[in-house]
Amino acid sequence: MPSNKSVSDAPITQFINCTVLRDHELQREDLWVRQGKILNPEKLFFDEKASADVQIDCKGRIIAPGFIDTQINGGFGVDFSQATEDVMHGISLVGRKILSHGVTSFCPTLVTSPPYVYHKVIPQISVRGGGEEGAGVLGIHLEGPYISREKKGAHPEHYLRSFSNKGFEELLSTYGTLEGVSIVTLAPEMDRSPEVIRELLQRGICVSLGHSVANLSQAEEAVCNGASFITHLFNAMLPFHHRDPGIVGLLTSDRIPCGKSVYYGMIADGIHTNPAALRIAHRAHPKGLVLVTDAITAMGLGPGKHTLGQQEILIDGLNAYVAGTQTLAGSIATMDMCVRHFREATGCTIEEALEAASLHPAQNLGLQHRKGTLNFGADADFVFLDDNLNVKATYIAGELVWEASTPS
Image 1 (cartoon, helix red, strand yellow):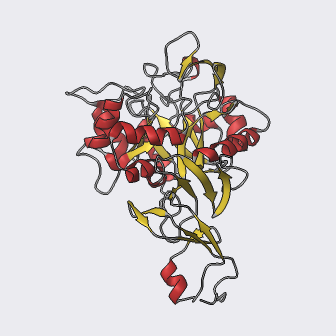
Image 2 (tube, helix red, strand yellow; image 1 turned 90 degrees about the vertical axis):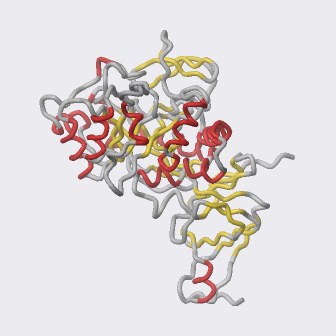
Image 3 (cartoon, rainbow, N blue to C red; image 1 turned 30 degrees about the horizontal axis):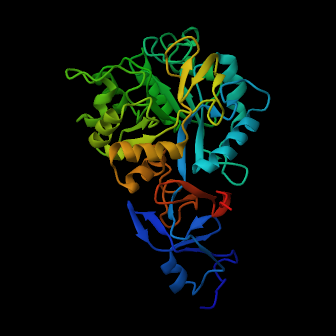
């Protein structure tokens, strides 16, 4: 078929011999890409009378949307909560390294810190697309300091703050700016949190509930005010109780406004959440489950002492503890590990496991028309995986940015 370049002179790439995740199903079909976007082959054939300029044989691999990590504190020796002179250098280093995990977009996460750290770090991080230089940045996730002292986890207590006196003005003063911020985790039971949630929502920022002793009624009020996410479900919140299930109860609440969805992060590393709890959450609300790594500086490094913001962290095997305690402090898991563990622990389908790391986080951020999907017109960010969900190659905007080495 002759190529017709009346629409665009850009080359068309056809990925053949593959199984594509589209419309919640793995389908045996080709994937067509041009100028960093997924193409509709019917329009290509019938409207443009065009054919592929390049064909790539996927050798039977699965093609899934690129993974999106909305809670990652650092990795490979980089701590995003450190007030360095060149924060983007660390962001770029981590962004390059996580390409091998299938991650094509992420939200650099800052844990509870003193104001000077926010003032120094936040202005240096900008939203940007991905490529060979690394996974794209979808915006900052600010986890704290407006959280519960009782459920602070690894967050340093002396830097925790409240909204009591100035409300939203207090938050702006602490952070310095909200430019480039995508998610804020806070405890909804705090005084004046309803007005803060509404103000953040007006600025297009996703509000997540976490590190909290909120009861179900307080959590439901927060959702009615605009909160849409739960930070690492089960961790750093009141345990489930049959008379008041707390934040966990949002998964089956009948007070969620019509048309609104609640999403929840899960650290599926086999350590933070027992497989039985992972199964309970998934079966209660499968479409809301978002896999996150909550990875810290030590991801990709060996055992020993590392940092998480203002805290010293000790790595013991696969466990990360605040030094001198038994308090878990993030994880050293990678996103592809979480996808595989989630599927094994829950017995979910391959499609469900992959969408928990791609479609669901994109939906939570309101990016599902561009990210987390292989629908026509979406960004051509995707991964090749084998049948065991091992990442074999990562593409951003239709370009190969990482590939597993072939055994000799």
